[in-house]
Image 1 (cartoon, rainbow, N blue to C red):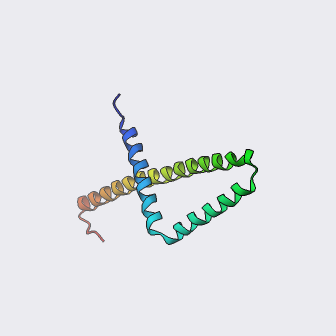
Image 2 (image 1 turned 60 degrees about the vertical axis):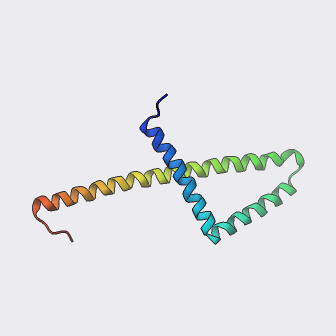
Length: 105
């Protein structure tokens, strides 16, 4: 089955969000510390839960991660679209200036 442009665009966004996330995590001390803090808190919660409920925290983390990924994909997608719109507006503005003989600022 052939992929649609939208499918390729979605794949691109997912790959780009993952790349950006990894760059931020690898190069941002604050992000690294937050991840460590979350891990410590998660371990404390896991120890406090009875054995029968430990899977709840794992299911929560899974859903939370899915939600965050969806959130970041949506933001990146909209930023990408906004960038195209801004480039198009800039292009139209330049064409308008050239047609009217207006010097750019």
